[in-house]
Amino acid sequence: MKPRTLFVTGGARSGKSSHALAEAEKSGLSPVFIATAQAGDPEMAARIDRHRGERGPQWTTIECPVALADLIAEQADPSRILLIDCLTLWTSNLMFGGYDIAAETARLAAAIEQAKGPMILVTNEVGLGIVPDNALSREFRDAAGRVNQAVAAACSEAVMIVSGLLLRLK
Amino acid sequence: MKPRTLFVTGGARSGKSSHALAEAEKSGLSPVFIATAQAGDPEMAARIDRHRGERGPQWTTIECPVALADLIAEQADPSRILLIDCLTLWTSNLMFGGYDIAAETARLAAAIEQAKGPMILVTNEVGLGIVPDNALSREFRDAAGRVNQAVAAACSEAVMIVSGLLLRLK
Amino acid sequence: MKPRTLFVTGGARSGKSSHALAEAEKSGLSPVFIATAQAGDPEMAARIDRHRGERGPQWTTIECPVALADLIAEQADPSRILLIDCLTLWTSNLMFGGYDIAAETARLAAAIEQAKGPMILVTNEVGLGIVPDNALSREFRDAAGRVNQAVAAACSEAVMIVSGLLLRLK
Image (cartoon, rainbow over all chains, first blue to last red; front, side):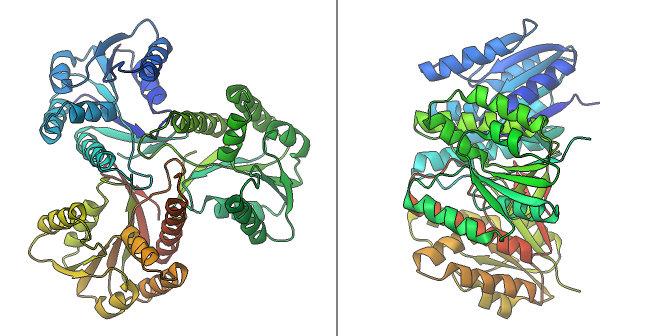
């Protein structure tokens, strides 16, 4: 039987990361937090520190801005649960690093489907506002949407969190 | 038994306020509209006037930009239904007034849980677009999301309105 | 019995157009793509070309930036399925063309309700981000929301697509 792979999407401050944390802790497995964030500016550094403080001492943290497919292949294991937070920053890291986003997304989806242990992947919905007035934001929005579609398709379960509450997508 | 407390969220022009009005009128109770909007500019004044015109003569209107917890304690009653519209403007009023948003939100959640009569609270989802490019908008978006999570948790029911139709959250 | 009229909403790159295409092709009827897009700039022209390439040779394409109600009256037929993509661009075309959006929306809703054949209408949710800082964007967002409410009410079924997955609205 395939391990559980849970896709958690939602808006900013919707409670999606808290939901993912709670699901990971409920599993009883050894939790590994895989952070795609990079502390590039003081606002982001403060956010990363606050989030790290919210997790208990049982958590291991690995920073992984780009190479998620390889990390999943190495780290996924029936005794552990991986929490990858978040795919939107990963998409941004790929875009600003000049990577082939479609190819990296296909590698990530394959890694999820072949993973030897469970994982939770957190992402953001960013396409439900007014069309952004600059081309780079539109390109990012399209890229983030394509990543979400591919990863949601690869996962065994998917939910959307709205105001801290759950809508089941699959 | 606790009175019904209904959280109604959704996007701009999604039909959330109409849904809330219809639910209030179906209750058969004496309806009280609690407006958090302040007529600070002509666009907002026109919007307030249009909304007031859409409600029937059975409605009482109370303006309450900030002190919602106290107003609920005073006004909630089994013979009345309160319609509070909306929490997003309330959050904005707190933020621009320099209030402690976390403390005020905790007071509001407690007032909802202890209310002696039913109420409907309308809010907006504002975190599902692209990340805003100014820090104040990001701060507001985070604050609005935290308010939504806390109030949805305190209510007995929650729905999201999309294109005039209902998704049940709890 | 009334023909099936399906309303498909979602964010940018949510997979809503792919879902609509798949539903149209599953029907076994002769598919007609009704494009509201106009190739006014190179970015949009490229997007239109890419979308056209994604559809198979069995598709007929009709460009219809504004007169959807008349086109539905002419084209809807039990042997065909119409796919109208999308109502958000239609709203934009009405707004920039100086049309009476409320009147055109009422005509469109009536045409859907009286249609002699099935159709799928694709639209965008644009009201779930932060309030836009210019009045024209706010006006457009309100118009798009009202169109969505009216058309969703006129259709026999409605779904929202999130990360390629389906939430049923009715």
